[in-house]
Image 1 (cartoon, rainbow, N blue to C red):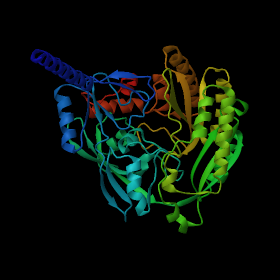
Image 2 (image 1 turned 90 degrees about the vertical axis):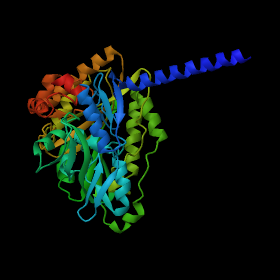
Image 3 (image 1 turned 30 degrees about the vertical axis):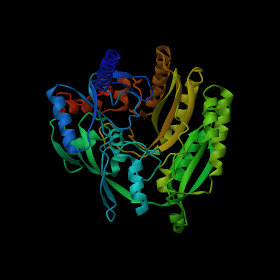
Image 4 (image 1 turned 180 degrees about the vertical axis):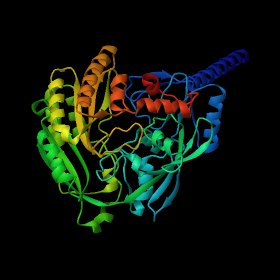
Amino acid sequence: MRKNRIILVLVYVLFFFSSVQLFHIQQTNPVFEDRGRLVSVKMKTLTSGKDEKDLIKIVDSAKRQNDTISIAGIQHSQGGQTLYPNGVLLNMKSYNKILELDENKKMITVQSGATWDDIQRFINPRGLALKVSQSQNIFTVGGSLSVNVHGRDIRHQGLIETVDSFRLLTAEGKIINVSRAENEELFELVIGGYGLFGVILDVTLHLTDDELYQIETHSLAFDEYSEYFQREVIQNEAVKMHLARLSVAPETFLEDMYVTNYLLSDHQELLLEHMNLKRDSTIAIPKLFLGISRQSDWGKDLFWETQENYTKRLNGSLITRNNVMRSDSTFMDYEHARKTEVLQEYFVPVDNYESYIKDLKAMLLKQPEFNLLNITVRYVEKNEKAVMSYAKQDMFALVLLINQDIDQDSMKMNQEVIRKMIDITLVHEGSYYLPYYHYASKDQLRKAYPRTEEFFELKDKYDPEHLFMNLFYEEYH
């Protein structure tokens, strides 16, 4: 009996230490995928830091061991912007404190791992709101700065315009202040720089007052949109936010649109009644129809009708600024063993919109296998403050949701279609957004972003040893 017990203990000990070793291997050689599951990368290790001392140690250690560092937040990029083979993945989500709020100056300082939701929950009771953020608030501030986001607000430009300053942990292991007046060259590089110039620490942002908006919706044809927007939206100071959708349903493909405007309400005294922050919720019926639309043309028609009818029911309702900047639902989350959904975003000058949509439609009608599920349209005011700026003039931004298989043949087919779309966008003096899968060619990148070579040259200036790396740089430098 004693002998059996000894054998049992030895087996348990052996199993325990084998499990520990396997756990260690999994932690020190983790494999990560991009959001779209089209990129799979084995990293050396995953790490994080809760304070500056931790982050400085991580940078110093990587330098000593000749490692590279890729910086990540929520990791919703889709082209390896937060990944690099055998590198150190620095996850910033635990570096997330709210540091200071100046209510009089309407400025807040937060650590870069804080999410927009964290900020909203902190400032909403104080009657303050964000100036610019994505329509989903799950992303980190540092990640949003790194891609220089834009949103539904049409009176403030890109996120770069709302940033007062930030501190940066450089490749030399130093912490420096960065603003329009101090290290200004880095200000224009780090914002929209995809983590290639250092670790963004704390960020000071300009805020604005929370307001009560009334929702106004309209349906119209695509060739009416540009004139409508310039006449009824941008010239109407009461309209604070705006978005539109363009039909991808076969019956009305790239023909019909509906718009949603957020007008300053005449009843600001009701603001307190609507200030509770809404929570993300799964909307069962739209989620069901979106699922059907992935599989069939009639499902796309049904989904478009559902979207349009749902929006019409919102007409006249009241909503606060902070709640406009929160996702309506999470029904677009998608998991499938053999398929994925990727995003593309194209920017086209307002005056070129009609001709652009005509050319885009003519090309896409020849691509029956290309499964386009949704197009959202926003407005982006001209802003060339960042080196990698996408809005060279006043633009409409078209965000495309695409369903595709993840096998190599499907990826190749999608690349061909997307490159054609980018070519059409460039012909119409437009550009495309960089956080997504690297379907674009090097030549297309340089045409869309004329300062690309300068960007890469300055990368060598500020990080000559290439401590901070990602697959975007590897693909396009």
